[in-house]
Image (cartoon, rainbow, N blue to C red; front, side, top):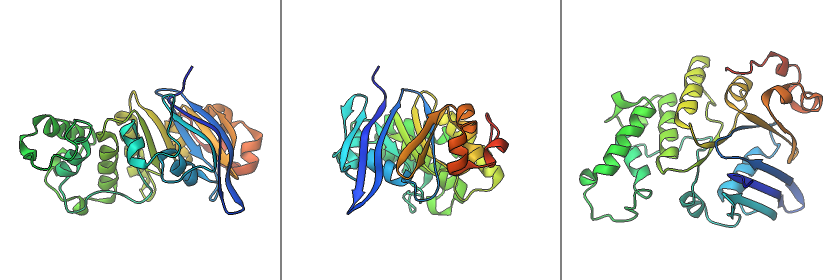
Length: 256
């Protein structure tokens, strides 16, 4: 069975230093995968390899059965994979609605048709309105993105990330910098907007990981130490020793 995303003996070296050391991973359609590991484990490098920001030294990345390693990020995006970043990536001087409308144009076939009047693109406007409701920012429709709260900006970035219609979504530390209450609300938002999509998320908050993920990939020193259900990972002695420690026993599976 072909996975939505497959990594085969994926490796990345910088000079003599091997950062990613033979990662094998198969993520099936509709699965939610949490990627965890200590700082410096290679999690961000792994995301950069998958999304095309870095080229692998060797190995393969396949999206719905097609090789994407070596392609440019925009090419991968157009094949159905989108990602967010640790640092919020939005158009600060555009409104919430305008940000979302920009995100849907290519997927609706408008590409670089700059001569069109955006107000007349009814399908794009309707899709942007739909996204705005999904991320609960309808009341901030005309607010400039730079004037949103941090949590609202992160929600907007999620809307932009899914706006292009990608089936595979990568979220890089989506709740970083949020309060406990914001994190809880944002975790529920992620669940809502990624229904039916394949999700990989790098996250340090164990409550978020165990409450959101169907499976967890533990990355240590550029290798996948374990890839299993939250319950199995929580009980894995090697994982506890390498990374999670006693905090695993306190993590609540099923909620943040």
